[in-house]
Amino acid sequence: DSGVTQTPKHLITATGQRVTLRCSPRSGDLSVYWYQQSLDQGLQFLIQYYNGEERAKGNILERFSAQQFPDLHSELNLSSLELGDSALYFCASSLEGPSETQYFGPGTRLLVL
Amino acid sequence: GQNIDQPTEMTATEGAIVQINCTYQTSGFNGLFWYQQHAGEAPTFLSYNVLDGLEEKGRFSSFLSRSKGYSYLLLKELQMKDSASYLCAVRNSGQNFVFGPGTRLSVLP
Image (cartoon, rainbow over the protein chains, first blue to last red):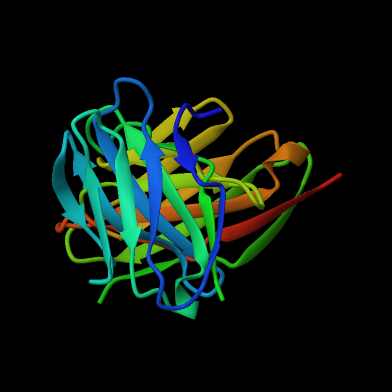
């Protein structure tokens, strides 16, 4: 158990819908990272937050947005869902920056039908 | 462009040593990471290199040569539980992580 929690574990929805994925980092960790993993594209970095502020942005689509709240939990919002958004979404946290160990949550498996 | 190359699959025998190579071409460099991922599970952080040289951590070691755009992960005394995918990732100058396709390692008895 990494100490990072993600909810929900599984999510099935339809094209065009909007969903919110939630992540609670390990106690004391200030940085949160979001990743997407699909069979055809491998693991892709989406975005990083540090203590409530966006720190780095990767291959995150405009239909996707994220935020980190004062209690340091983070949410990833996916809207206008398409079939290709079906993937595993991982959240990870680290104490401060990426040079430190990143602990991954168990992931949310999203299926868009 | 940004590109990271790793062998797709490797096979080794229990107790042996295996070296997984990673070559990269990215826009800037702010560190190289190795992760282990068992099928159906989340990745696990293995190592971080930002300076040239070898970093050793138990049975696992990671090497970096920035001038060559090259890294390797060395696994010693292989165990069956080391069968997994190994992901190489580089953090570029834009602070983004670029991941390789992963190397699927099979450890045979």
